[in-house]
Image 1 (cartoon, helix red, strand yellow):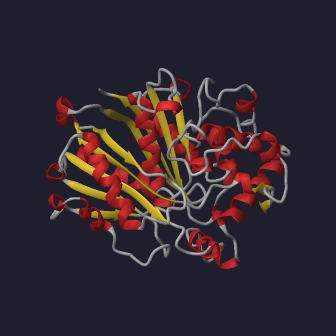
Image 2: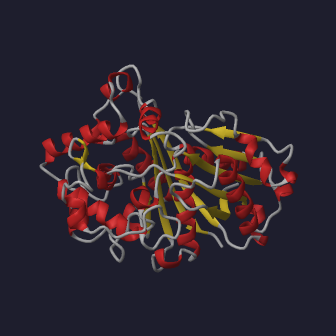
Length: 388
């Protein structure tokens, strides 16, 4: 019995000083149930995607979802964590329960409150999502890690600073149309490609505009088995999904190969019986612009070292053969860790339901989602289609 998305909700992303973690979770939970046209009493299971790691003092958060409605009391609730892919991990856990016949209706929430601690503490917490004994313990942060990755790419394939700036500019332009995006401003290629006081180097060749944002936010999905579809207002089916995990230590991998994402894409596309060229759009994990560039190559849009060609020929832009991150991606939308994977599925579902507003990709009928935890350690790829 396959799982379908039948409702969703999305909070604004950004610095939300007026909302704590509980308020974020409760808000999207209520909105998603209402959007799906179901009651809290219908829910068979709850999954919460959340990294935390010290962003907030609460470490036991799954039952916070029950605050959304008294009828959720006694419903089994589980927190799921897989670094920056915690949201997709929660989605897949709910899908597993539905496909196993243990649940008919599931509520999935992804949330993170990142701005209640200092920038230095954010860097420390995120750094601890690496192989600590070889990486974080030596002072390697995630900007530093992806800065090294960008530098290695440049050494192997030439200077692609302008390529990364084009990705940043594309996503910021797309983000203007996203009502929930943290940064709804078209920065333009020249600004993104120029090192300045407002756009300094952060790590290696990566500039500020090459890095995703520190964000608060939440998103939620209601998933149902196909028995629910007769009464559903809309339904977006998982045509295929794949999870791949690689070794945690970078020392055991060729990071430029992006092998985990490549394998996840290969498995998901094979399971869906389609090619990447058959997709109408994709939401991919651009925690840093170099990650989006490598995603083009991992998903089969370009040969290794040739991802820039998909920007040059317009493929990944709105109106191109395969628009990438029509939402603005993590780069413009924001990256509240636990919320990200759920948000990506929400935005993809909106596209396929024809409910994406100014972000809408005309005629979207098949979408891809790629959510990544760590530096290509946990890779989740979903292929979604409209069922109703």
